[in-house]
Length: 189
Image (cartoon, rainbow, N blue to C red; front, side, top):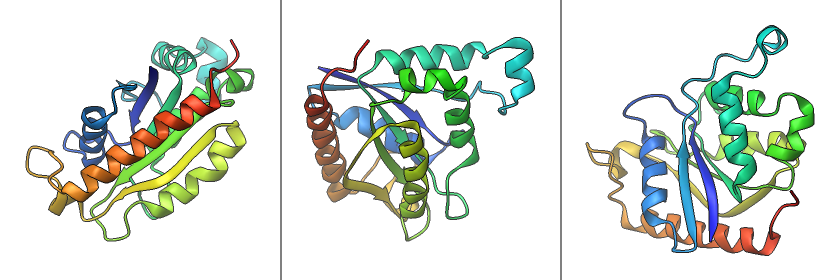
């Protein structure tokens, strides 16, 4: 059984990406659990805070949860054709101090999903994450892509994904991610 930490890159209460993450939790195969984590309590990254008071408690706790997990699922919006600031801020905190990068990200299987109101899905945000994940030494599971476009038409007012082909795509993606994690094997302690 693989355990994955799922993080939504949007803080909005009615976020389509939060709905997408809830859908992923519900559609995960029996050999994969997704434990949802929040980045809401993360301050804006500031090296002066890190130097004067150390790593904030919310950041340290999530770093430990990720380090103990088998993988990481980032559910990313696309803002201005790129990475959302709040999720990039979280990754910046999670990669500090640099000596923690191998513990938190190095060799860790990572999957990306995303939802947007627009027609292009989140393809540009996914592309923008590639150099970041590569730099951190993460192992990206890249297929089949889950990039939900036209979110108001595929999620109902309660945030339920109503598009059956997309639900099947998510389920297929998660089965593949679980198999990828199994192939990669356990990370060294």
